[in-house]
Image (cartoon, rainbow, N blue to C red; front, side):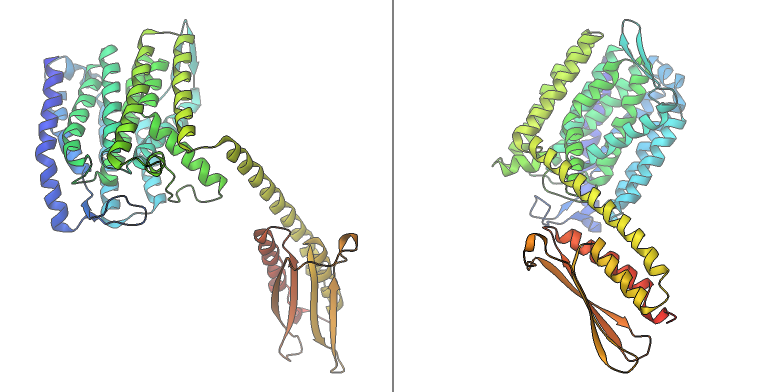
Length: 484
């Protein structure tokens, strides 16, 4: 216990010393997070606090691992795996630092996460199996690699996305470190207990400067480092016992950022936006929208996390079905809280799924029509056949009318018209999108204008897509290329 306390307080002191130094370095080099539409702060704040967290943890925990005692023996027994975890976390620190300084693309950061998570797996840190007690063991076999990579990358991004308010990510990560440390001591994993206590101490010292009003942000250097460290360490810790509790406790401790990330991705999917697109509908944004001040929103998130982890610790004294029931109950609690603050709505989710399903079905039908019509254009040898193909396209793509003025061989102008017969004797409504396409005349007398009117049918997106498909046909099969 004396070693544990020394590691915790030693890391805390190192972080208290390192953070002001990092603040001065960031200000001197202009590495600041400026206010913006998606930002809550109103003044530039240093954004490379991850360096201070890293120094506070590594500066004390790494030397302790080499001591000639029980901790050193535990480390040497799995030195390659521990080294892989620390190396992966260090790599993510520098990736995050590069992002803080130069703004990397989201795909670049994701690629780095996948590579480092794969390296951790290659070192033997994998979720091979989960025991539910009473001899019930679920073995993942060949799925161990992708499952572990998904776990580590998921935790890394969850922590990264939770860094939205002063002290939010650091506080939640600190609670997670404490929970993993408790589990490590419960299972006599002294080496992992040292790592988590050193990270907890470093975060505690950093929070003195990071809590609202923050004097420094951890930035991506801190959030990516923490995410990788927590994700990989939880796997390494759970792999020793292969119990459900070993994986369930980190999920509970990081339940808020995990569910926030999942629901954010679900919202973006339903809105048909990029999964990496920014928004202001995260859990902490919802709390602010409800009228809470930033400090109170963070404390609310702390309280929810502590409540979940407090209940989760009961899983240490249960087995089998009891553990599953407690774990499921805690997850349900998180879902209800997110439902209460408006981060997710069941009715809106169902409607969004139906809407997207209908849009995808419509897109497939339009593409099928396009591929069929393309054959008509491809085999058109004369102008008459080409115009027949235009009429086929107009019918299949639900045009209102197509009109084109062309010059005949005797120099006379004539108008070609295709018009859809209105249903039930009704006149065509004004709910149409009009487009004029210049068609190069094969006789060189200048472009002929093909005027298209497309029925919107309540969806401008569908109308635009059908016009785009027809534009491809008109561009790839111009009348200038016809033989007759």
